[in-house]
Structure formats: C-alpha cells, structure tokens
Amino acid sequence: MARITIPDILRKKEEGKKIIMLTAYDYPFAKIVDEAGMDIVLVGDSLGMVVQGRDTTLSVTMEEMLYHTRMVTSAVKNALVIADMPFLSNQMGVSETIKNAGRFLKEARAAGVKLEGGVMVADQIRALVRAEIPVMAHVGMTPQSIHRFGGYKVQGKEKRTALKILEDATAVEEAGAFAVVLEAVPMAVARSITGRLKIPTIGIGAGAHCDGQVLVLYDLLGLFEKFMPKFAKQYANLRTTASQAIRRYKEEVESGKFPTKDESYP
Image (cartoon, rainbow, N blue to C red; front, side, top):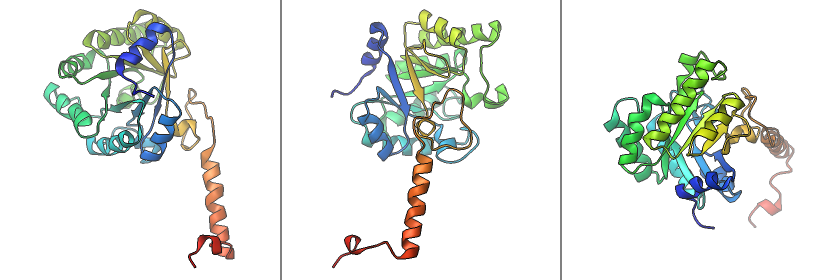
C-alpha cells in the first residue's frame, strides 16, 4: 500500500469518501493503528491526559511531543502522521512557531502539524504553509483553551458562537490549512461548515456530516477510566482484559504455576 499523502486526503472530500483518523502515542499501538488502515495517525497532546495522567493537555512539552512522534513515525508505514503543536509552542510569535513546527518534520519525521485556534492563529498558519510545513487546524472546543471555556464544553450552541466557529474555520482555510478538526460542536453547525469549506472537516463530537472522524485511541479501547466523553464510543474494554491477565500472572507466580519447564531453559 502506498503512503497516504495530503493530496489523497483532499481527494477523499472531493470524492465523498470518509477520512478516518485515530490517535497513537507509541510504537506498538501506532503499528496496530496503521495496519488497521487509518488514513491519518494523530500524535495528540491528549497524551498528557491518557498517557501521563494529567487533568489537561496544557503541561505537555515540545520535547515530550517529539519523543512520542518519533515512536509513532517509526511504526507507521502507510498513514499520514500529524503531530499536535503543544500549548505555548505556537503562541510566542511566527518565528518560534516555524522553529517548533519544523522540528516535528526534521527530527520526528511527521508529515505536518495541528494547531488549535482559528482567526487568532491564521498568521501562524500562513507562515507555516509558506515554510512548506503542512497544517491541520482545530476549531470549536479547543482543549488548550479549557480555562477560557470553563471546562470541556460544547461550543456553538448559540447563533453568535456558531458564527464564530464558522469564521474560525473559514479563516484557517484561507490561511492555507489542508484540513480542520471540528470538536464538540452541534452537528447542524458542523454540517453547515463542512458544506461551505473546500478543505476536509474531521469531526470529534461534531456529528456524522463531517468529511471524516477522529477519536482518542485510549477512549476507543477502554483504556482511559477518568471520564468518557459523549462522543467517544468504546469499541473494546482492554483495561479489564489487561487487569485480568496481570492478576492471573500474579496468581500463577504465587501458586508456583509459572514458570513451567516450557518457560525455562534446560
């Protein structure tokens, strides 16, 4: 299978084919995700919550994101790998944004980066695109703005806020983003935005009318127990499976059932 490229992603919208994106944070899961046929693998700063156990994504650093992105790109052979720009990596001016984003391509071999924000980050997106760094945008509920929003809340319920999300989505398209994530917005708003934009929309809690969908891998697999967003369908409960396996190992060591001759050298 040939490596998926940004023109392939754009073509999917033109042809009415759904784009499937999933997060991954390490080599083993990235390999599984890629082999399952994902179009895009996102190394999300959500790792701050689902891997590091923090309450928000805000404390994730550039070095941590680069570390996890390197693991993912080592595993992925087919999908397009996009890395999240962590908090304060693109808020300190255009030159700092280019420097940080470029590290994901040079050092971690990602194909592009994802920036949260709309109108306010349009200048950064333009600069990155001019520097040949592909950008996926992210509007609606942006987790790095959690304190301004007062928590993880649906955005765009009122006409004024819905129009603001449309303005943001239009701004990032005009700035040169190749796709935009719509997070936690009413499905009617997402449908309207999807119909207006030429670039693909990828929804997470934005209904079925987006051009594609993304989920956090650990939500999908039942590995994150702190809370389950309404939009996160659980397709497996690996936390229970893992717990049972570990308890069985403990019991077999205690009872002398492990190791046997089969697990020992003569």
